[in-house]
Image (cartoon, rainbow, N blue to C red; front, side, top):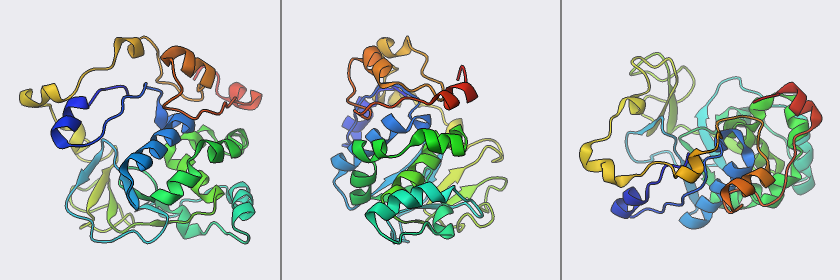
Length: 263
């Protein structure tokens, strides 16, 4: 994180906001804040989240049907009891369906803005006992792919596999079995893709070098490429503001610190 794309957004008429690199994908607190701020800025009914390992092959032809959706991950299951308990405080009788758990919220996933503004707010994220989830599961629960399903479910929102997103693994033409159709508008790539992930092999054209700038030197001095290491006080002291993260503090439990030392 931390690369500046002011020039690109000026050329493409998009919105860019520079935030400190905090390995957001492994720390729900800055991640959810970024998603929330993006939803506010876009002010659309739905938003689509893309990652560097996505390619887009055409317009969306299968429109959103639920509060969130992404490529299908067959057989994936979550620890549902705690999330359902929180959801039922908002929506009595809510059940986290097994097919809903198969919606992969990685790059190439959609979100209803109203759901984001509720489920990803600072207060909603602070309501979740992330230590309990980490202790019941593993540190992977803090990864954005897993943290978002828990956060949405905790507020009673429903995700569903989306047929306009598919996972590419060992074939250049056929998506991973069950992940989505070959004509999906958005493709997401795994590490086994032949020749490597396509976008990772791209090189910047000389004419485009002016469209981005490197990370600020004041940001580079900190090693933020860690896991189970988020701390609001440290974040604010380092970067001078909590603008790009959850304003409410969080502390890892002793169990989590002992389980994942030096991460």
